[in-house]
Every structure is written in structure tokens, then in C-alpha cells.
Length: 337
Image (cartoon, rainbow, N blue to C red; front, side, top):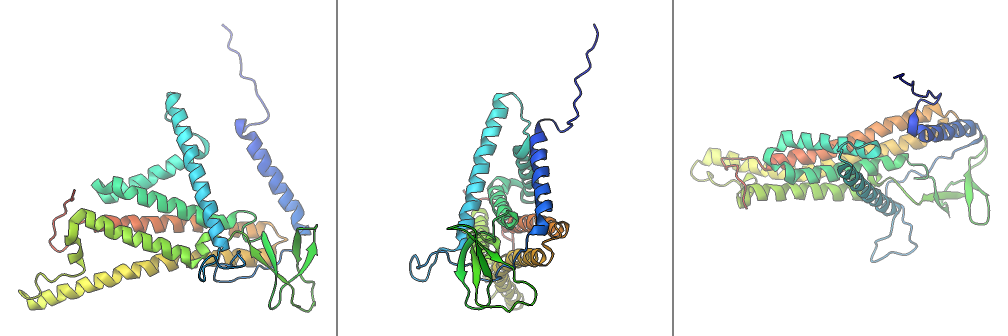
């Protein structure tokens, strides 16, 4: 029987051809339109900008990082439902091989689980949900600064000092205009973005750090019961062996101080890296906006920085949780029901 040769086609990317074609069209449009754009420098402010005219209660305003947090949560929930559907499809189809985005998520979760298992041992099933959830949330929060429209679409407000002139596009929309060379700065308008990268808000990083550190203490209590707190207040040998007991008591106080220092370390490491990255993208886009390739290099840099910071935050949380389950100061390592 004569074997038929498969039909050859000039398009080598198969079913993903439309995705590749769309990326090529978008890239071509950006490169072609970049000489026509004159980006302005966004306002670099440390606190999140309020979107509500009046406080919701007390001095609490609804800010643009809150909208970004809701968007990040929505994306994570959507990804979870999509992943669950693909897993059920694979099981019903008699195969456990996932493709596309679901396959990438599976590979990421498998990597995180293996890291947890090699560190936490029998506590893997308890610690991994914390590790995976924090890592995915911080990853999405960090990468939000790379989404078009974040920090660039919002509400125009009158600037107290400086600002830019605006060009009215229609009845509802306008854009900021970059001043020409030699123009004198006047009181113009500034942009309050509708979405701002969540990790550039210190409130978010501090809240996440508090959750991580409190969860570490909860895991420690589950592993050792109330004896876990002898790690911080060790008075067992304070009177029987005064010298060594005093040393043990002082070491315990240092351990207590280190627990509080973890909050500052967690919060300011994540906040500092992502906020600095956002400012870097602002400045490079303002200075080199017409040269598309150069800002793109910094976008790729921030892509990897966001991923690394998410992994570091989650990995440190997982490591501290694993350490909390280990025996200390002669306390046996046993699990309490």
C-alpha cells in the first residue's frame, strides 16, 4: 500500500497561527505608531490616589490600587475556574496532559509543590496552599504594571503645580499633551490612573506581610502547641542555670524581635523593587518613547523582576513556616491534633 505524504503548508505554527499573527500585527502597529506618539511623564506619587470624591468612612477612600486588587483577584479566580475545567476535560478524555496556559500553570504549581515538599516534609499539604496562593497573587499584582492602560488611563484633574495641557478627543475623552521645547510650564492637568500596580502600594505589601507572619505563628502552634512560644520566652533554665538561662532568655527575645523584623523585610522588599520598577518604566517611556525597542528591554526586565519577587516572597513564607514546624530548644517535633 502506497504511503501518502502529509500535506505540507507554508504556515508552520499550526493551530497557534492566529495568536502569532495577532502578536505580529500588534507589534507592527506599536512600532509604526511610536514615532507619532509623544508620551508624558506620569505623576510619581508614593501613596495610592483616591478615586472617590468623598471618604467611604472616616478617612478611608477608595483608591486605584483597590481597583487593581479587585482586578487581580478576578484574574486569579478566572484562571482557577479555567484550570479546573481543563483538568476535568483531560480526565474525561483519558489523558492527564494539559496544554496552553493550563499546562504552564500546572508546571508552575508542580515546581512550587516540589520545593515545598523538599523543605517542609510531612507539612507540605498544610504549607503549600499558602505558598502557592501568595506566589500567584504577588505574581499577578507585580505583572499588572506591564498591562497596557495601567497607570495610563484614568481621570484628568487640575494640577496644583505644573501639569500638562490637554487635547479634547471628544465630549468625554481627552489626552495629555507633552510640552514643546522651550515652553513655560503652567498649571495644567494631571492624570489619576484608574488602575495602579498593586505592589506599589505599601498598604498592600504590609497587609500581605502581616498575613504571612501571622500564618507562620499559626503553623508553629499547630506543630508544637503552646510550647511553640518557649521559642520567644525561654525561662526553663533561667533559675536552674542562671548564666546560660539568661543567655537563652536573651536569644528568645531576639527571636521575638526577628519575627517583627520579618514584617518590615517582607513589605519593603516587595514595595521597593516594584515601585522602583514602575518609576523606571515611566522615565524610560518618557525619554525614549519614540524608540520602541529600548523601553521594551526595560519591560522585559520588569517581567523577570516581578516573577522573581513573587517567588522570593512566597519562598520565604514557605521557609519560615517549615522552620516553625521544627523542634527548638529541646522541644520534640510532634504534631498536635
